[in-house]
Length: 129
Image (tube, rainbow, N blue to C red):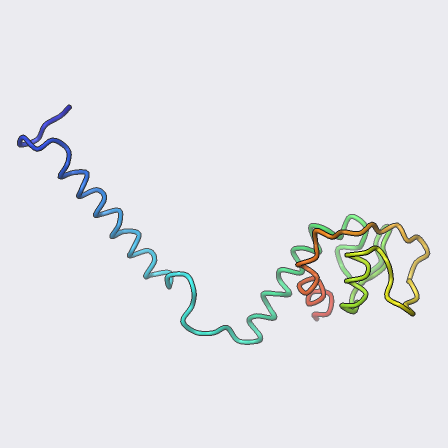
């Protein structure tokens, strides 16, 4: 073991820990420390929801639906403007809401219950400009 002035590495370990701690503190303060002190506007919240919905749609839906929700896909119809009621019925149960007339006769969409918590985001995206 290396000994410096008879004290070993203890002072250097302390200084290293102190400098790392101060560095982390400085980074946290520069980035705002996580939660913002200012509440987000309704527009910012909606924009984040639309962005999340676009991401989910692009990763989960375009195998059957067109990447442009205004256009029909290979198996699924255009879905732009879909109601939340329709999305819940199709995504969670593979069914249609009462009285809804399907755009296609294929009826091949299987339920996707793992998307339960994403319905609001998908709805926001499909109903955005």
